[in-house]
Amino acid sequence: MDTILTTYNGVEFTIGTAILEFSYLLAAILFVYGLKLLSRPETARKGNLWAAVGMVLAMITTLLLHTDSSGSHIKMTNAIVIILTVAVGSVLGLIISKRVKMTAMPQLVSFFNATGGLASALVGLLEFSNPGNESLLVTLLGLIVGSVAFSGSMIAYGKLDGKIGNVSAGFMKYINFLILAGLVILTVYILMQPDPHAVSSLVYILFAAALIYGVLFVLPIGGADMPVVISLLNSLTGIAAALAGFIYNNQAMILGGILVGAAGSILTLLMCKAMNRSLMNVILGGFGGGGTVQGDEGGTIKEISVSDASILLAYSKKVVIVPGYGLAVAQAQHTVHELEKILESKGVSVKYGIHPVAGRMPGHMNVLLAEADVSYDKLVEMDEINKEMETTDVIIIVGANDVVNPSANDHPGSPIYGMPIINAEKAKNVIVMKRGMGKGYAGIENPLFFKDNTRMFFGNAKDSLQKLVNEVNTL
Image (cartoon, rainbow, N blue to C red; front, side, top):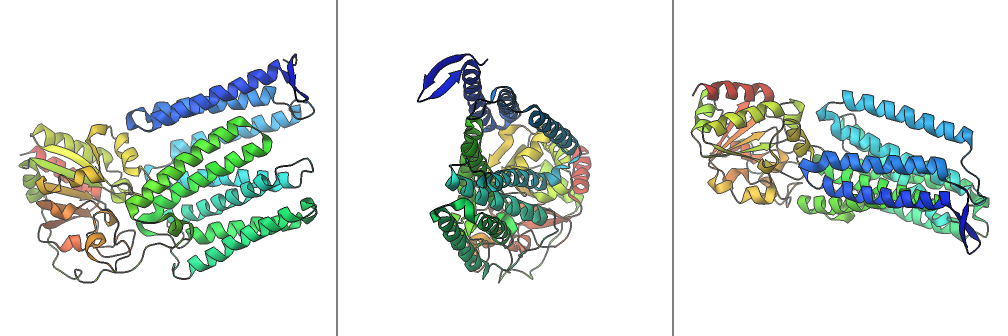
């Protein structure tokens, strides 16, 4: 494998080097192909597998064929450590994937994202002190971005798991701006030194400041905004991985990181548009939940019985189901699919209205319903389902709150004002399934519950849906 093929600018290219570079090219093709398959729910699983094959290929060829500047291969002791680390991580990942509940999937995504950010930050921290490192700017950027992704993802994990509450965002944006400015100034100062390695102690201050920024910029974010920050953190982890790839001149890391960073950035912009937020507000931590709505709360709540709800559904022509986090908590996706099939057997058209930020992460509801084998063509995005609201006989809201809150349209003082929503109030009849009258994740009142065409169906989502299934079956 060490036979020299050619020499260019004093660098020798061997058969092993050629095979390694070709494997990176093939891995990149598999990454792109996998990403393309991930764009459609029905092919997403295959996309994951093809991308994983590409990563395994890059890891194996790197382990066997990678050489340093002196032409030496990876030492056996280092190879053993790498193999053991990968094996332990694979086993832990398999165990976690088998045990994690669908409701905890957003937390799991945040945790995995944090590990990627930490790995990239540690690469920057260790490689800065390497005398042979000539990519100091890239190293510092990787350290900063990886640190922000790590600490921010851990805070997101705590918030999604209910362990960390929201902090008022009024003053946080100014603190975040000052820390960002400090990170830029400190980075420039280090790079301007005649011997940057002589001030390596400042790198630890940079590391600590980036960790603090990651905490503070995620801390005030709440409500229905969490999917946006999860997407942003995911893109940061990808960027950090790409920067680490530049440090080691590893094309597989660079390409993989660029793809993750680009996909995450595009998704972040799309989510910001769906939430009517600017990207600058996301970066500065300038948005979050809290607040109340004036004018509609305190009205009359009207309940509906199982029999009345069943008759209304069974004799409708068009029914739209809007799933939310409450559906995931109750693990009611299979039951709602059963109700869908029974209604269709009676000639009722049933669709699912999917809001882009329903749940706790992008695509949460799509994944949840796919688990129950709901047909992908029944999952209709917000903009399209809104066109059908006025011709919808019944809309069933299962555990959703903020994504159907008309305050986003009607109340300028609301924290969610301007956020595009599913216009459930325009349907002829609205059935809201909730455990009680508690406020949603954004912590604000929902005037929809008091509308004349709205009826409340209280109880656990799974139990309530099962009652409807049983009752509709008898009609």
